[in-house]
Length: 130
Image (cartoon, rainbow, N blue to C red; front, top):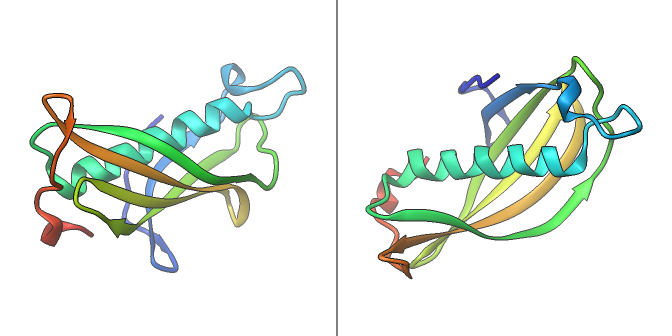
């Protein structure tokens, strides 16, 4: 389930919520790490798209310093918070944190690149960035 909201943690915006379902679990009954990374990547991507109104495509370049802090369980709500921390000529870096209530689950930074015709292109509308 997707829920876009505007609540904040510090300077970060709540950009996505997800209810942990049985298909999200690993063999130990905990949230699978790959699933949470996919959720974080999608939430960060959507946040960038909403922030810059790109002329072309936006792709994930890299995850940086990804730390898994605690497990998440079936039936818990994951809340992803994001903050744009850097805007380059062709890239945007987003700091992302995933919580269950006040318990930090994962934190990372993701670099997204703006592409036009498959080539890095200048970030549009930087003044529109949240």
